[in-house]
Amino acid sequence: MKTYWGFLVFAVLLSQNSWAYDPCDVKFAFNSLAESQCYRIPQKNKNEEFIISAVKLTKELSKVEEKDNVILIPGGPGTDAQAIGLSLNKKGIMDAMWAHMDMNVVLFDPRGTGKSLLKQSAEFYTPADFSTDLQVDDLKKVVDAVSPKKPVYLLAHSAGGDLAAKYAALFPDRVKGLVLYSASIDTREIGESNLRLFAKDFSYWDEYLKTCPAPIAKNLKDQQAGIEFFLRNVLKLQRIKNIRPPRLQSRFYLKDFRVDMIMAIENDPGCSSRVVEVLDLWQKRITDLPVDVKEQVDQMTAIKFDPNNYSIPTLTRGTWIKTAVICSEGITHDEMNQELWLEGVNFSQDTCFGVKAFFDVPPSREWLGKIKGPTLLIGGKEDPFQVPSAVLRNSRSIPNSQVILIEGGGHESHQNHPLEFYKIMEKFLKSQ
Image 1 (cartoon, rainbow, N blue to C red):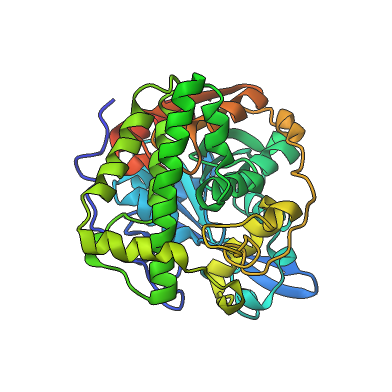
Image 2: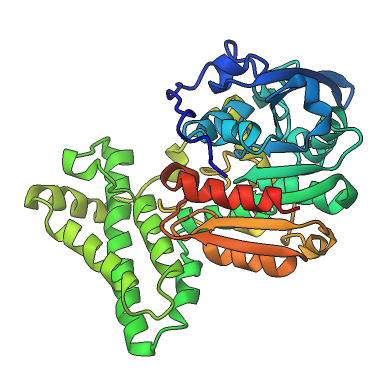
């Protein structure tokens, strides 16, 4: 059947300030041509009442009750519906879902975001006020409001998978199909991603080296350690001296190196090609720096970063929600004390901004076996956050699931592979 890609051409909208954004204004909020039905869903946070704002997009409101509903769950945590709506509709995908697939598309603002605001700004609340359990209950209210009689499809991206997977396990009869798109299945997976990216102890790399022949592993380890030592000095040069030479401003952060290494590890099980190429490339970038720049960086070896002068920044709204959820549920007590790239600075001080962990050990994932409906896990082979190995692991724990890894796809594969992504979605949603 012919698709609608020809006429679904849309301009890119810049992100709107929360005061100007309303999901019910679909043309403005999502650049959509759909007819719409707006929902204001009452909910409570402790003794405080607030409203969850949601909207249903459809081809014809007169036939809205006849169609299946697919609920889009944004990532973050702490991201509103506009983020996923605009991102998908930048390539016309969201409008194609209601126009071509003839489904109802539902978007909602999670608590504390968009038009689902609490009485005070998010940073005045505790991490417990944004817990996964409470947000799953919010999702239940949304499902019950937009589709009281029929089961729904859930399409979750990134951290939105935490809510979708848990809801599908708790209420299997209310889920017709589950799509986890570059999505974590619990907050712990986001914590694991942060540990890979920011902990000084790169244990993910050490585990990989165990699969390599001993002489090769030692050479690779020494090269990686030397590069990270240099990049930590680059960070000290910026943090202590407030100096960032122009040659060090474009992808010369330690996080950039970790991202490249993670993608290489995921795609080079033989310790033979891509990991070596990444290490050689970064070594060459350092070698090719001007002598004066390298001298500036090398001088930082003798200077120690004083963690007593490190102040915890103040976070606001969405950034606070993201930090509160990930650090309280995704990082353990012991991991909070893990050192980051700067001497004496740990997760609690920097990445987690003083948020306290809820757990001594990561919670079990046995509950994944309670997800009964058809489940599709879509990943990108070049996704450094929800890595392919995690997507495959999750699929083994979820009954009736299938996995598709998009070649060359990253964390938002629909941006660079829109037609492939759309066809995958269409086949799954129309086959149930």
